[in-house]
Amino acid sequence: MSGTDDVAPSVVLAELARDLHAESECGVEAVAPRIARAATDVIEAVEFVGVTLMEGDEVRSTVRSDDVAEQFDRLQQEAGEGPGLDAVRVGRIVHAPDLTSDGRWPELAALVDEKSPVRSALSFELSTRRQGLGALTLTSTSVDGFSDADVERGYALAAHAALAVDAARRHEQFRNALASRDVIGQAKGVIMERFAVDDGRAFELLRELSQSTNIPVAEISRRLTADVGQSADSAKS
Image 1: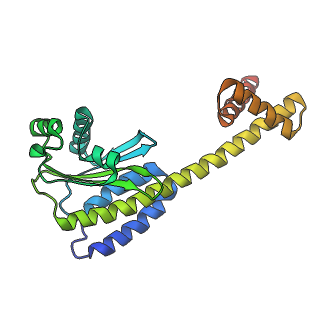
Image 2: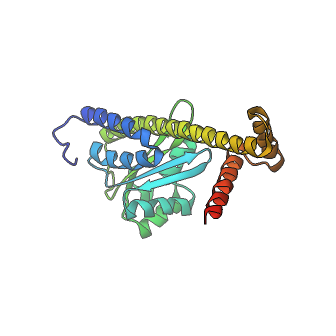
Image 3: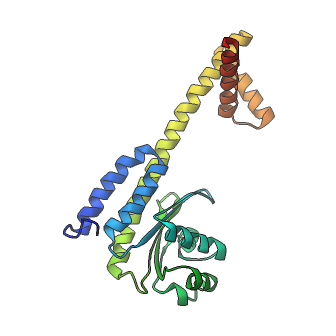
């Protein structure tokens, strides 16, 4: 267990929870690889890890520990079925002791038997009480590679991971909101100066343009300030 053999799993999980919480301030892209690394720390039987994160019904990002995990994820996508997809779609723990003989996913079983060394898998939905966020998929080259204790540890890890992902998304949303507010303020300043209007009227003009073009106010503001910046650079040169 990568240096954690003499440490109780509950202690390892507690330390990982603190680490994940701290890294959540860096955003989802920083948290996902840490979740993958954490899985190998908590569960000795884990050989390959995949972390799939969703944005609504769309895949936002998928982090794999190595080429084998990437290939297994690709085979699931090709077959349109598998433990990771079931964990996302149905929202549960999915345990597959022998993928090559599992009747739940016959197409995946055939592909794995032919193309992948993976033989057993554990998938956990990453979710909060508010929403599903993705899935954590752990795999092994051994049939019956995961014990009941591994399932329990994986479930605990997935719970911590989901909270970290949720926190990371909240941080991202907050930063994006601040950035949008700043750029809208800059755009209003440009309009106020160019058209000699007050703050309220400048925002009304932005909103009217947004409605007529079906482009968000923040995006229009970014384009406007970018255009002004380019014009200023051109004038200097």
